Every structure is written in structure tokens, then in C-alpha cells.
Length: 188
Image: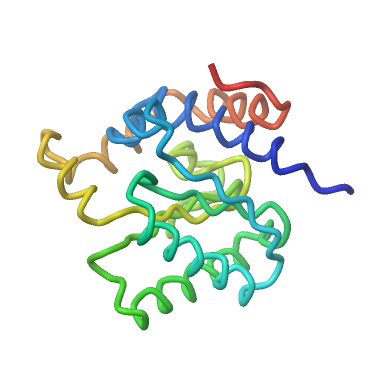
């Protein structure tokens, strides 16, 4: 099966961001960066952990050098379709960030088409809060998160609110958004 082009991957990701993450306010800070176009969409060709980690560190370097980029989505369409393989990558990525003394400077968030929270059933709609069209690592500036949280009422309740909302909406709503994103629809 041929790999999608970078343009296709980015269009799908932007569609998902606009219609799921921003549309349902899963992340109260995403809309601002989406509108400002300060999100870097980095489509990686990595199909092995080592190469993906090299791309992650390159993305960190880019964020350190370019303050106009607020956040980076490292999108991995080629090698991490299996959720367990992706979790291995995520674990190694977090270890590498700690070894490079990047904790407190940058933070990773995780998204995957088959995302499943530990202890949850695979078909639980709550998993869709972290399901995306492709596996990805979201690299965020810690200081920006802290600043944004100052303007959010009860930020600790965000994950719980998202889970409740996803369960109220039901899985079919989110399945449709993911399906539409992969049909190469444009973000508005």
C-alpha cells in the first residue's frame, strides 16, 4: 500500500485538529495556535524508534531556535501503526527527553489511531480524546502550557471533562471525523 504524501498527511491532521481537538475543545489552547498558524506539522519518514527519536530531537532543536513555532506535531504515518510499538516509542521518547534534561522545558502529548487508555476497553469513546488519523508525538513548550493554564478554570478537570464529553457524544461521532480526515478533506 503506497504511503500518503506529506500534503495528504498534513491535511488529514489539520482536519482532525479543527473538527475534533478544537471543535470539541479537548485542548483549550489549540485554537489560538491553529489560527496563528504557529503549529509545525513535521511528517516523519521514520519507521524505526531510533529514526523517530532523531526526528524528535531535531524538532526540539527547531523549537529552541524558532520562537514563532509554538508547538510541533511529529506525525509518524509509516512505522507505528501497532499501538504497542507506538507505546514503546513514546516510552523511549520520554526517557530521551529526561536524559537530555528537557523536562520542564518541553512536554510530550501522545495521539494514535488506536489509542487506548490503560485499563479502558478499546471501544470506550473516551479513547477518542487521544485518537488521531496517524500516530504522532505532540511536542509542547512547558512555559506556554503554564501560561495558558492561568486563563483556564480548573485545568485539572480538563481530562475528566473530555472523557465525559466523549462518552456522551459516542464513538460514532469521532469515527466519522477520523474517517473524514483520511478522505483528504480540507480544514476550513
